[in-house]
Length: 223
Image 1 (cartoon, rainbow, N blue to C red):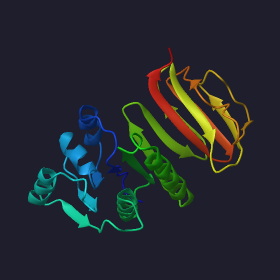
Image 2 (cartoon, rainbow, N blue to C red):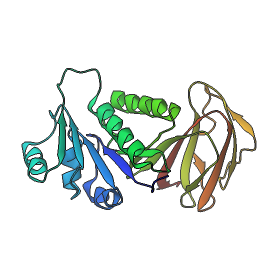
Image 3 (tube, one colour):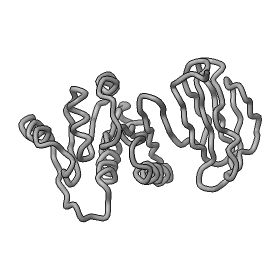
Image 4 (tube, rainbow, N blue to C red):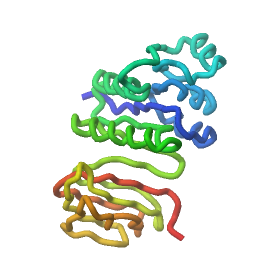
């Protein structure tokens, strides 16, 4: 088993470069999907790989990447996969190659902007979860991920967290460290009972006995 390696994909969505400086500093291997390379340079980070049809990359960004020896894989605009799909495939290959014991890919710049892109990105998260790889979406305001087993999540007292069943099936869940306690209780796919729970401790525990949950952790505290 290899060492844990933080692999991330940066998409061409909403981005805060000030926040991104510190966040990308923690990334060991960064793949940029097309215009995500613009965001990486704004956060003072070179991509390790740039991939896509390159229609959103600034000429200045592309020039810097070429001068600095960044790996570049260019694809035609007319293709079946989105640039993000291609980037995730390379990220998964890197993950398998490193043998990292933590099978997850961090995803930035993929939660804001167009709703169709967001839904498509969440669909990809479901597909990757089915083959054992967790996609962890993160932006300055929130983190989104799928879980299917006991999971500890660090936060601050007063922050909100939402739990929603995935794949159209009910989930049986228990929680600790949250204001609204669940004890082997059922969350139904056509109800939103799990919206806006609240941290009462620095760590909460979500135990998924059956099913799969979307977990959306909001960093702002409940007013």
